[in-house]
Length: 613
Image 1 (cartoon, rainbow, N blue to C red):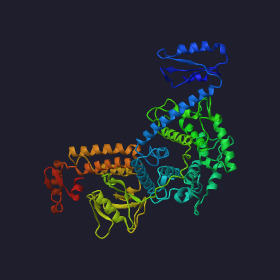
Image 2 (cartoon, helix red, strand yellow):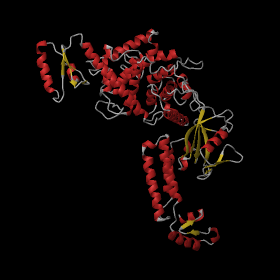
Image 3 (cartoon, helix red, strand yellow):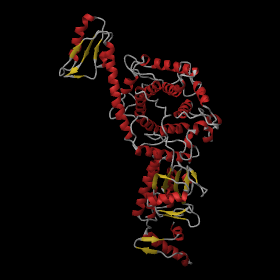
Image 4 (cartoon, helix red, strand yellow):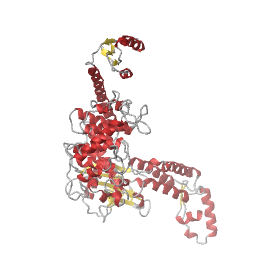
């Protein structure tokens, strides 16, 4: 019924009533000719459902502001319900870390929403983030050269009240202060803040160091003032900000995010004030009649969400400021028009649910909710007390041997005097893990849960990885926040690459080594089926990552391959005939090891197997 609100000038208004309950949408008739009011009301009434009771009410010019306020109050009530449902929806998802679904932006919105975040949710995210970062540190090109991955993690950790200075042995905030130290593979230009991902690095960096108003450390290669000055150079002549420098025009999303990062400096730095005012004017002019924003393709939710966050950071009420109300539509009504149901939003109008859109809509609503309740800016966390790290994180992984994880990542408290050996011994005892250390080389292992060194290959063995690096010093003393991954390796190369590469290698080796003519039809069929399954898993691009879920799928395929090889049975008829040939042609029969028949299973030494091939 809001189409009637748009009719033209005013004089009569009608509130639709069903029984004694006011209908959710007030109906306002606007026109210049008072004499035609009654006729227009009659025509409109003819279009309304006849099963309801309607009440006609006359308003004066002064009353029209009240009618407008009814609409705004409805928006406020609706957003609260939507915010509640969206928070619950995101809380129902297991949090991921870094580039996975339901990761940093979900965590950030939930952490700043004011709800009591379940302890399990918080611990799950903290554990997954430590594990994910330790894996990135194990790569030759950590985080793919993207510092924004780390910067988002700082925001998420802070929102949950966790310290970011001891994560897998790294102070994550230092990535912003000293970027080039952590990305040695980037060239000089890309290694500087803003050099690879443009304005995003600077905006996230400024947000990072302002979360707790951290002063610039003495060893920093860039200062807060330097970052602000660099950000301002990304503004284009029309007032927008562009992702990369020297572009002729920018984007509304990045402009809004930039405003958010500069907001704390707006009152006191004239250059920032002038820049932000120009950007605000650009955003206002860019709105369409729905109060949203359209690019060359379509209008999207995420742009509206970022603008709401930006305005809230400047203490601008997007429901009242006339600069952002278009055709009686507000940014809030535009955002809510993307709402589907059950706490979910879409990316485009009338489109299916979109998780990224839902995350951004959620923290935009959180920002607005904090604003109207006179709470700190959503990125202002100076009053959040951060919990210092007091535990280590440990896992026992036999993925390369096809046994998955013997112990999934856990958090374990440490005490003064603990070393790698003492920590592992306590963890193993608590989790019923059987193991033996090498007699003269503790804390190195002989075997864990029956998986021994040398079992799969001459070089196969158990190793320690601390914060992504192979432990070479047995005297290492773990620190709070360290990630200890005890990993089984076949050749050491398999630990520095996605596990799917090992799977592909084993598929190729097995196909070259085993022939159907040598083995029983039944046992070889099992092997072929295992190879087919493994090939399917290896070809799925989703299994090409380092994440735990993908690697466990790949590990299971490896386990099936190894089991299929172990159960291979030699073709008894072929074996018997081949033996006769060997015996007839070989004068030194004593060189052929005795063949022991156990039911239908034959044990053959390497010499005989070579003869058969």
